[in-house]
Image (cartoon, rainbow, N blue to C red; front, side, top):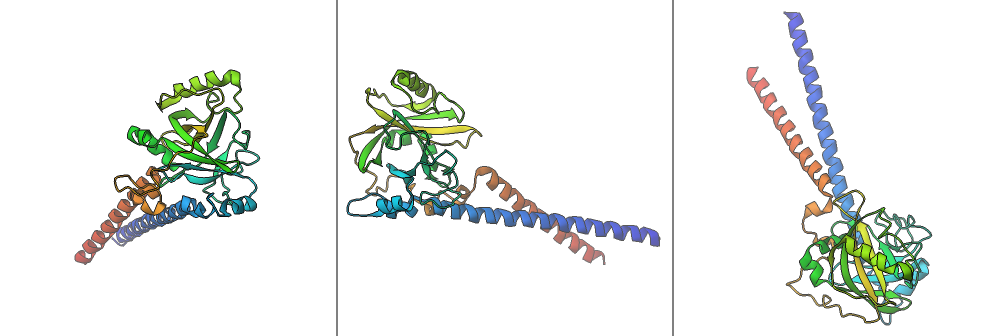
Length: 306
């Protein structure tokens, strides 16, 4: 009998250790999830266009010149009207330099908007490719995914490029989906003889494409970011660089237009984390509640037996 009681106590002790260990692991998982949520919020704040607004090229200001004095790799400024895309553009020695480096030249996980290292820094090439992180909520190039809604694509056709100390218009005419290793799209220095085949590749990858005829001397700009739908997928906006500067009709607030301009105005707390992290966080939270409830009921049953 004593031996049986000893075994029972040992089994209860082991069960208690396992239960408490599981709860501890779940609590640690929840703590990590809370940290990830907090960290994502901080990263989003670092990457908002508002953080760079002081440097934006404007009349009678030295902001842009000050930024170039901080970082000689700054070559321009890009704005896509009606979106949070309103950032300086840099160009490094290679395409890795500004993955984790800000436009101010300091280390930052948010990176910067940067031109392909092999492109002409004055945007004189036929095609210039710009890269930026796809960040939530809609900062850096994170708002490119909004163009997958045709109504959004149709209502947001213009932007602005500041290069060579002057403004140029951006006439957005296409949204593409392509693989990151697709050389038919991700090639630079396209010569005159290869322009038609390059434009055919653009048509072949287009989700939406406006009817636009390019002149021989036209230049185009591609804005590329990671797609949330596939590992190597890329979402790409394509725009024509024009001498005509377009009016920013979104500069005046319109209550009928959605506000995509600030990380503080996210669609919800779930937007601060990628979908799989949100699901994992919720799962850990539910499992922790179940384990805590189970332990509470078990203790109550043991007390009643005594």
